[in-house]
Length: 619
Image (tube, rainbow, N blue to C red):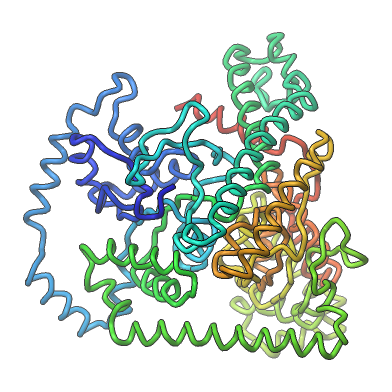
């Protein structure tokens, strides 16, 4: 198995000539996109998230190859020559150095690096590295999707660790991370055996689940949004085949494609719980250089060696053509900031451990909160089965008046404190100018979840502790304006088992794999604790806190309860909505959060996939 530096392919000489123009290197797992329009970069990264191919291979196959002839576009090499000739005349060398020194001196580093950005691709990182990278706020990330991409393909690897090709037989290697300290330890055999077992199991489970889903929800019984006499309706597939719709032949094709995609997505969703955190992924990262500066410093401060290595590779690629824009990372002040972040984390880690000891001593070893020292499983959780616990309601009844007052403040001649005082009065409560009416008016006319409430909603704040499996965390972490901090991955909280696994009689099969994980985790935690988290699978429960304002709560809960979402995080967000609305009904309700979906569905992606097929048919 390759490490990060070998998570690359072999290319022909012609491919190298093409790729070297558009990517900062052709032999590393981290590289910058260059010499292509922004729309091409954006499209390439978006397509990347739903492909098994590396970005450079994807670029060759789908972006510079004519789909009709299978050959490179005729003017490709002419364009490459023009780009290379133009680059020779770009401002560089001493002139560039002098120019940037003057600008930095006159305007300051932050003003300059905030207005320049770049796209970088990172391939072959494990799930923990991806989560560290994506912890930033002011950046755009897109990652290889577990919903649309099968991670259980095997690849042929040469002696130097380069990927040769996808294996069509049973030979080859799964793409999970092999860590040098682990592979040089006595645990290497157990690690490799357990990882192979997990990937084998995901493949088998997914196949069994796909067959079950097709039996349970045959295409003949499903309804699809189609046009009937010019009117969009939900029509059963059997009626589409019978010709009872407009354009039945093409509607049947699109319905079959949507059904196939939905079944695949559902089976991948259900089976992903057995994927380990060592699973290799690819991601695209777009940011300003100010954001890169801050993120790389954070990454370099971690005590997890793989993320430090990745940070150094990112710095090396960004530095090639942007040395002054990224120079703050390795400057004297940058190194001091990295050390500050490292020591800050270590001090807080030590205090957290001391707090655990003190609490256990104080409670005479009865455990911490609702979970026991040896861990608690979803299988036997006791009385407290809440996965969304409201820690700080923040927005109490008094803040109702504050939010309402701030909503009309720009349009009133009164000072803010006088508006708040007025809204609290009995006269206002009995008039059309009451706080509830103002809140209702603020969200009136929202015909789409993308229509946002006013900024005044940001005055109400909440803190919750969420408990969900690692797969849920991976999805919800993408909501970057929610303040989220998590505990380390582990086995103590137990794990989730999808209902469908029980229904196909695979509970024992599933639990056997978890026992193998727990055995390896305990050995790794005792001997190589830095890498123990890598063997924990997506199904294991974890805790993290989430702090957000009401405006962000509207966005997150409406987005993450949407029908097409993963059922696991939909349930957590539904529970969170109930918690918030119970504690603060004046501000959190189905009026302010009009598009919260509290329903349950089987093939949740079916309608969205049919819509996608309809759009593609019109291109």
